[in-house]
Length: 348
Image (tube, rainbow, N blue to C red; front, side, top):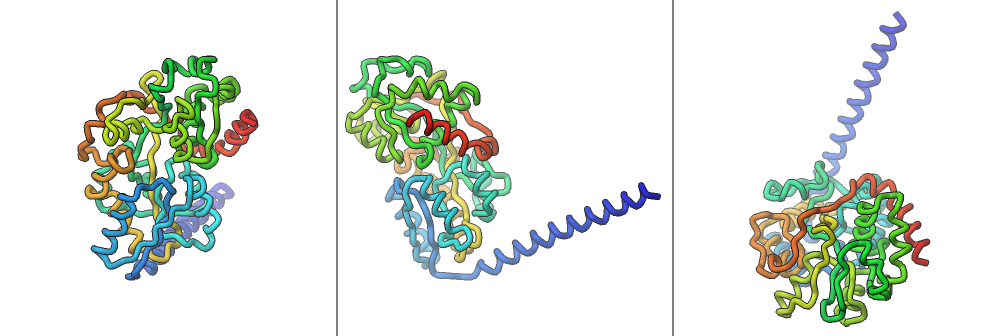
């Protein structure tokens, strides 16, 4: 009899939990629908290196198609964008965020900072880039993080991770701060993936003499690199395509150890409790559209998420990534703060 009572009690509790979940989902859907009314504006947060052509494309599309005024605010580096969203999470000021990467997803979900939305043309996106099956975050471009080398300012190119530690490369390497820069963050994750959680700190301890400086963001670091301050920098495998296409030079090259690099998927999402929900959906639809994706290669200097977008010759002329490296986003979410503090201690 006691067993039967326990079974019945468990069934009642389970049914109650399921009903509560259903009510919660229904309430969330009703709340979103209530915010889907027509408005005449939309607020977008992005990082400071978001190209002008892409910004203008979004602004002009929303004005032309819907008569909507776009307030597109460039907050700073990727870390600054995340911090701004986090600080405003109880009173959000933005409707859409552009430019975080998939490594931020666990925090974004845990802090309830985004709302789900599946854009109209998402079926055209490469399956491996759909980093969130519930569509709280949707990809809008992707690339690979690796070293870049200035061939005119370097006697030889490092051939392996171990070779990078050589005295030949003293004060030759510009690192990007993993706490504020998305490429810097992912390069740190790359080393953890390569060396494992037991040995990655030892690698950084040995690398320290070869680091000239650590910059807060990609723009600062890459600017120093192209000014000739150091011959090695953390950047994208696609970065040399910019110089090949616009400057007609092969001076700058991606360095791929074992034909590998770290996969970075940049995402966009609708901010939780967005005031202009309908316009936020329209922005998301446009980011995934063929029209916008065709602008990605020669403006963002990244890969489009649509396999049907033709790549310029500059993208196919250099080294190509055969092995995409990545860490599980949840592992990153659970450990990144600890990893970052340990890295900072080593580089002090």
